[in-house]
Image (cartoon, rainbow, N blue to C red):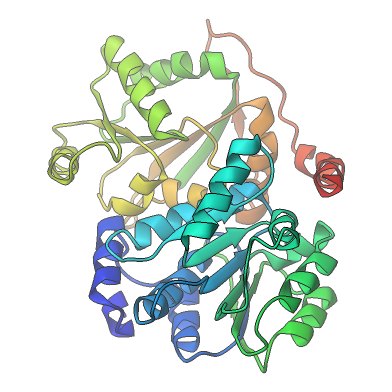
Length: 399
């Protein structure tokens, strides 16, 4: 099966092609036809299954066939980071389509509020919001949800864990009674069933098991402070026998900075980022595939957009924000029943992110000692996410 089989708008298919999407994942195969038929759905799908595209793609296709002018789709997410990630994925998939989106979340200074306010007043098709900030906009009378046709609850179990039940119910009261509602959750506890019964209409159910990294991938990690990451990477590249290397950093700015530092050290690395023209990106990928360029450094867009056999090392210079991104990144190696190595650099504040990755994959990744001559790294705190979650989330809720 390919994405052509869904009958998507040509502009949407162009965006899929640009992002490197080839074939739908199981959650996409099952959910997309139901969403296109206007069914409400309850989907039990963990991060790493492609769930975001499973609802974004059919909703984008629907929006393209309608008149614009009012908010068409509301996506609720538990955290600012997830709201931003969803918005970035919408931007990529809708690159050639006339669809607009805005993430709405708390934190930051007054300029963030004003930016959100101007975007909403100007008119936007999709709002991706955390419940608390959305209610603030609703209380001010700024946001009108009376013409919303689609509601999505992403990571619904996490939102309920964070105490957002009342906020969700209040937000739903602002929406039209007749709408399509899509609920995605990694787990299906009784509270989720109760919420689904309350706000969904005869939903179809979709359950997908998480995809795991290939067995041929040797996963390793270093606990390392940020100031020592580049020196560690240089040591790995010099001492290892790697012929084709992908290095992932957290932002375009970090990608450019890392390329400069590595090239100054004599490393034949090139950067892959959105500032390059399409022809430049295509030529760079051609050189990488032909081994003319042995190493590329890029962001997560590269993890989805590249399909090259023979990559023997993937380095996560920064821990990805979402376990799904980790699976996509390291999945670039050990393809077609081959083997490869995936190394992740973990700083103290990213321990909780890496703990989530290990929980998702069901694998404890060995933590290696820093090479001789480099400063020792911090201790790994595998329970830091769990122990810090309650205090952090309660603080967030009080705001």
